[in-house]
Image 1 (cartoon, rainbow, N blue to C red):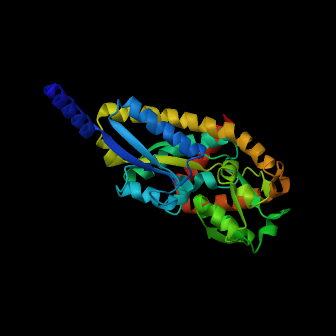
Image 2: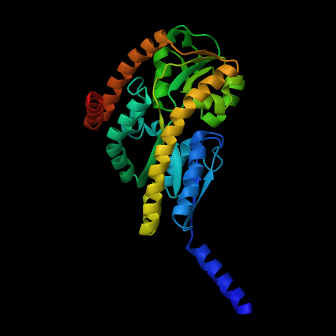
Length: 323
């Protein structure tokens, strides 16, 4: 009996030593579909690797703030993480292509943009020591305001939330003051008057209970920003081949699952916003026209910084749309 117990303890110790543990930080709350998809990915990766890899998800910016996660993965402070791609647009314009207003405004268009921009995105991340596992979009960005808005000029002089360079630029163009604030901190910012209006998804409006602070939602479908799950390349290379293959397969499944969830839940979230007392404008044609004009200006500005790499992405996107 003693020998059996010792053998069991030795086996348990060997298994523990053989298991790789990764922390996966996210800047979003546990109730969001993005984090729920991360939880699914983590659980499936552990099963697919036969327990060799255990991933612990840390939601709500509990491990790193949202804008610190990408750098933390690059530096090896954590092996894997999730961040919104456009938040890194100041590093390289390709990170911000999905936030050019009215470039890709539907799930089909967003999928095409994801496909044509992926090779360039993977190259940039590879040069930074990162490996892209998968991306999942948020629902289309709508305009939330404390007061009714008939024109973008009505936002002049207000405090407008910015979560990436694109939203900061929109605020500047319409004469608003851009205020950089992460989603986890947005309800407090609204409660204290730090922010008065913002562009974000129907999902964020429900998950963060933003309807408690603002009462108007304009469904302008400005763009679909993507979250990316990336892994430190050295950490990935440290896995055996079978575990690497398992992670990549589960990542592909998590991508398909996440895209389907995003599209399915958008309609549910829109109904929920209305049920919570928000005035939901599903047409917003005037605001859309104004934002399209802003989008054309920002697209030209983006191309100036993105150069030939950016032009290749936009040309491929246009070509794919014609097929």
